[in-house]
Length: 172
Length: 362
Image 1 (cartoon, chains in turn brown, cyan):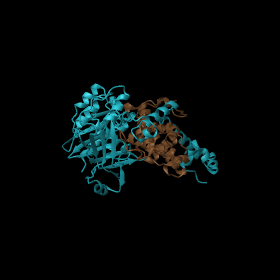
Image 2 (cartoon, each protein chain N blue to C red):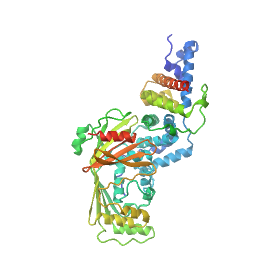
Image 3 (cartoon, each protein chain N blue to C red):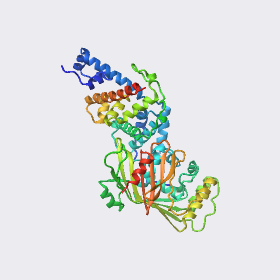
Image 4 (tube, each protein chain N blue to C red):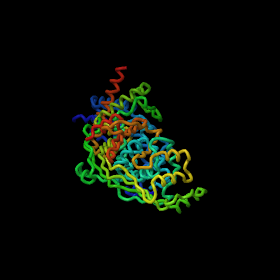
């Protein structure tokens, strides 16, 4: 069955960009959602949108990361996720110099993620992008911020989340 | 010298090269700033311990690319994925499924709308049932282009317009007005309109014979008058209101369109349908199931992946509506037809939320 072809052309660099950035896009979404499966779903949606976009190639990485963060935060914020769906994210244990990683429970992660969803959106996105490995300059470019304000924004977000963790720990 | 900002202290934790020499020199000799760096480091580490992510190996990237390549969109044709995979992939993504129905029917733009509309027509010609049966068997249906000519007229690709009044002017439809937005959905929508699109399938006995021969089997006898018979399906125009956040992914879509209709020439619709279903390659059980569906176009066939989407019914303003909910809880949609107009509400929302929006429409 013929479908009307080519009304929205797919950009020719899609596969190259996908292969270069897929892992990072999944990583951004997984940091928000705590679920690899959901993160890969988000990545699919983001790359579908990217495939039809005319985002300049040199901005692709930042655009994809921002889109993944927003989409994942929207999912998180929608409240559809249930703590039962909290999955242990596969991968190496994080390096945690001064936090007892063993005591970070699934419930705590869930509570912190909910707190993440309540942060001002720019703070949340900047935080996730920085923790996903984007440089300060890349975060600044992706979010149209000055590089100098990235540190302040990330710092505020981390401080808010740390308070949430401490509050949760003190209530145990 | 004044103390550097907290942002500068934070950057010293993980990108000290980005901090000026003056600031670094100050911090090195300032107990208060050093303490600030320590706090920033501690908070950053605590946050990083929570915001972890998996490491994907190359096989995962390959799998992701295959999935994207078979997505129900023009991407599949652009990447050379076999056309027969399209309906299968259409049914695969829970994210796309519930949401996509509303987008498709509304001709709305964000996901694969422009390409799904013809697919929907295709499924209607095939009279594929909604949300029942073994949907994987859809993949075994013949490509209709092997049995005749398919002509798509009109361009349903959504076009953004300035406001509801313009959308009404262009489509003649009353644009639904949302009274209360769900929590987490903010701002004003963008308005998109799509023109009427029609698809005409003209059965060709010669083509069908070739297709049957390719399977090594003879073409069943062609009913009188079927050769050259046409079935035409039309939908639209339509209007969609799309609320998006961040990267352009819609969080809420409210769509309305002139409901799809079908008409035929030269031969009754059910004759075409039944004959297509009798062709080689159709599982007998599915064919019998499909025959049980009414031949008129008043029953809207929505292909729904039963393993990924729950369906139910609900009352919306006195009309029976179909509710679709992704089993992972991420997306929901509700669709109903009233007086020849189809309306859908869908998004990254719960069933109760889309129903609340649907029932509050004016």
